Image 1: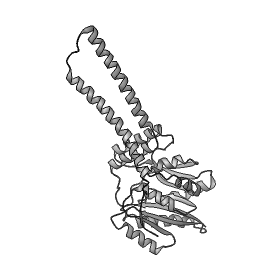
Image 2 (image 1 turned 180 degrees about the horizontal axis):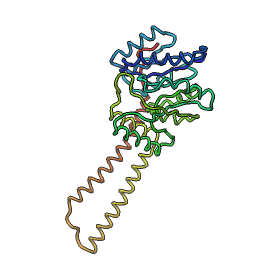
Image 3 (image 1 turned 45 degrees about the vertical axis):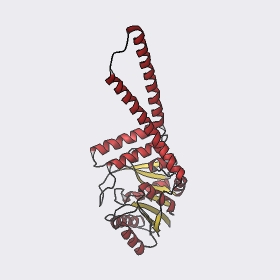
Image 4 (image 1 turned 30 degrees about the horizontal axis):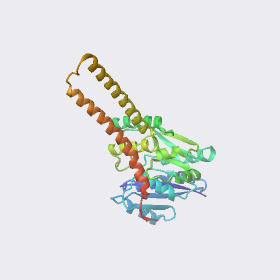
Length: 312
């Protein structure tokens, strides 16, 4: 009997956990209809929840100690840390990353498993084809994937979810990447291996509310671009060179005009505007450089990505 580990990061998801468990159990019951071939291995990662999430997970573990396990952080470290902890502690022959809110349909698991077992794939991911969301968010999301696809050395599919089923060797390869700053979508693409993507229509959350604000999504997008591309640094270099060339042309213009046509016309407003423009360009480029230096700073401190308070 093969074991499938299900990594489920949770942050204030008390309304969804039991519903998620019951839904997945039905999927495994269908998979094992004729004979028991696959055993679920639930690994809930409590990311410092402030509601009854941990209490509910612990009760599930007490009811099903052989199949339900958990890791509980000392505080909220973020979803990336939760996924990293799950991947490092999953023991299954196959490993799945899933959201507890059931926006990732568990019913796709049998098809994903069949693809890995019968075709030359080590990972099967999922892409949402449609989802009701704020038009501004939808536009920004679309632009992010277009930008990062152009900038990054690896290809990241638009609207790809964290939901995926992976072979053991694929998970072992991902676990070799131990950087502090993590952007999992990029890491999954970077390790390579043959990956197939299934498309499905997005569904609303089964319960609870999203904990991702627009500003957090923007910050997460910036993290992804910086973690997997040095294009912003190249862009800053080009901006600096172009600004320098324009300034040389401006100086030549002023000197020639002074030599042949007399003194310069008074124009302090235009001068102030130019100074502000150049200063803004410099600060912009310094900001880009600062983001990369900040990443280096965090990496060199060698702090753990998470601290485990309790596990079973």
